[in-house]
Image 1 (cartoon, helix red, strand yellow):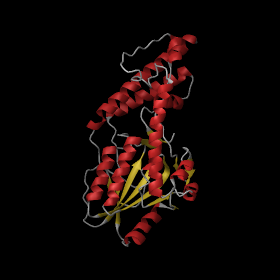
Image 2 (cartoon, rainbow, N blue to C red):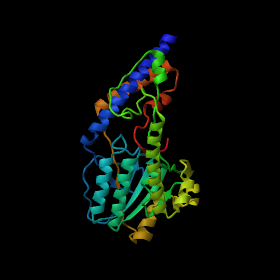
Image 3 (cartoon, rainbow, N blue to C red):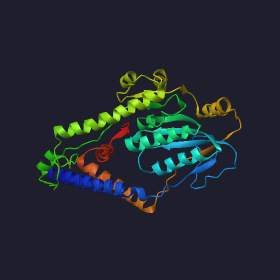
Length: 336
């Protein structure tokens, strides 16, 4: 039994090493990906059909863009693509027929860097004299709330969870005692005492904790200032709200984090009639759609089988194993 337990732990460590390699490969090759663009039929339905196309043409009439932000905000994943989103916002800014963005947000947030890029792209869009509204879906937390802040008005469903104003600077795993116990030694040849900080095979020092905390504090101050400036709330008041918790839609309205609880259709009608004075202006949906390749599908199935096997050997749920593998190695405005 002890032998099987050690075997499972060794396999788990190997998976961590492989996961680290995959993370490095993804980070170094992600900018080579070509984003897919998605533009659907003209509809105001936030769950409307979307298709793969790079066609941004329309009939030449004014329109509202229903722009979707879904999933974790990072370089790219199955539901989100940073290049696509920034390119789409830039296109809408420069299209004279576009009069407003109605952005549907269903996201737990994500990387600080990407969230801030989107924030500035949307601020730039507003400088063109166009309206920017946000509708929050089931979850618009942390970075999802961050990118919503520039909106002229923020709407939410009555069951929306939002807020989670805070930062995860990075999640560090110290597995040195475990490695010693099972007789594995990993030696990283490096210069600079903090060069390998954050690796699970080296101890976390007090200095390294302070380094990570300083990063977290700086990102946190940035988040607080974004909320204070855009929502017109005193910075000290924001800090009392920004303890990382999520808020219900009703609580968010009470604290002035959002403006109104309503339906998507009512928000669109308000933009059309009250803001634009164009009751018949059409709505065109822009939604990223990732087409999974055979390679991704194959390795996805293999990974799931492997995860179940390792979790069974370690005697832990697969969900716990996933959490241990998918820790953050970068500053994130992310609700977990």
